[in-house]
Image (tube, rainbow, N blue to C red; front, side, top):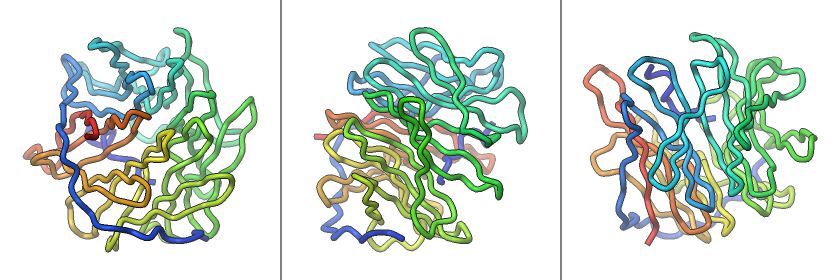
Length: 293
């Protein structure tokens, strides 16, 4: 099951001018879905509703919604593998599912008002939906003819491609109410990645200072704050960050080998997941919440 819990890390305008990099002084709270063997939180609405996915003891993967202290299961009909990635204030949830283990293609879904509906990029056999804003606009990825992830926005029944010029793969992860989109893009040989923000059609690269490996932006809120991850290859430590008005703050869950902040709401509440070695060469993962001071 470890494979299902690996983070999907998926011509720049200019690099942000960076300032000092303090660690964020805040308290982490672990999210553990009852009867799960591990879990991960991925999305949060402006009403503090949280979605993610977990591994039940019986096997497979199920999505979850956490609201007012209560967990509810999310399962696309007939699918033993269901992932919930994004949620808006109308409790519209987006994610992906597949029907068989192994290499079967992901397929996108929308859950709203107790009903599931499919959403798949035209002509592609692989679709993941990662983010949805309060206007119902959705961002996600599809796989092209060369099996690389490419981004899109879905709004009012229309798909619009999202591509960073010169990138091999472009992966939008979040969209705020203003329509600003955040994500990451990959070099020609997929050896490096950079974060990006697209605002009014203009793309700005986000790169954690002094990083030679990976930077990815996972979430953006209505104030323009960003959360994401970075690492310096081949170092195994993966840490998170929050970016506010040009300033980075480092995030690391205490004692964790990997810390992945995935989303941030307009109140500065962050959700994500962390991983610690499980003694078997992999990671034990759990979701977390974090309130910025």
